[in-house]
Length: 254
Image 1 (cartoon, one colour):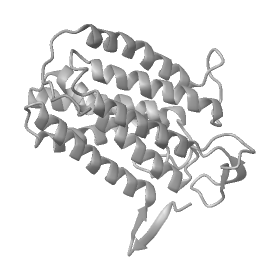
Image 2 (cartoon, rainbow, N blue to C red; image 1 turned 90 degrees about the horizontal axis):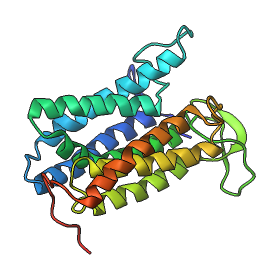
Image 3 (cartoon, rainbow, N blue to C red; image 1 turned 90 degrees about the vertical axis):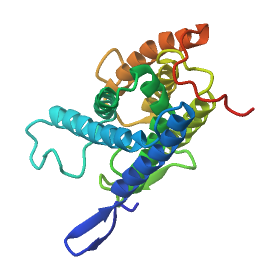
């Protein structure tokens, strides 16, 4: 594992931070392409990804701090402790605020950010793998199991490399969402598909993650995933049945 990439003077460069920066850049590039194809100003992509990144970081960090309230060494801007569902909530709030500021219809904005959001998650999980930050899974005897002795949250036990699982799964999700941009355009339909696919991915990976059960035999992330799926299904259904197709990009190539 490579949690730290080295230092220059008083500044230490972390692998997770590098991957987060790459995630923002790549998400911005694909979002700019999508906005241009929807007839919107691609320059808005910069403000959108920055707003999503800031909101996502603050949401993830604040949720973590609420869960670990009063523990020593914890502050808003320390380098570890980010929670996925807090990040999603914060990122959504950030994007909504940018959409209102730029006067972009919320449905159009939601559909435009769906695929870039999945891609950013792919890169972010690569950062988790490099950092060994505790997002790994439970013990396993499978041949691809691995340990994280030099991680930010080290373990010498052979465990499921769940960040790798998630990166692969969400790369497939990104590909699906990018292909369906020209087909699911009504309302929040493409974003609904993101909620369904991302929810299913996280629901399943939690079965091999070292996460405590909190409610009805499920982890907190699984409960949130079920909520995502239940919200996403009617949004997708509305898109399949048709409706207004505001900001429609050209159909994806066959």
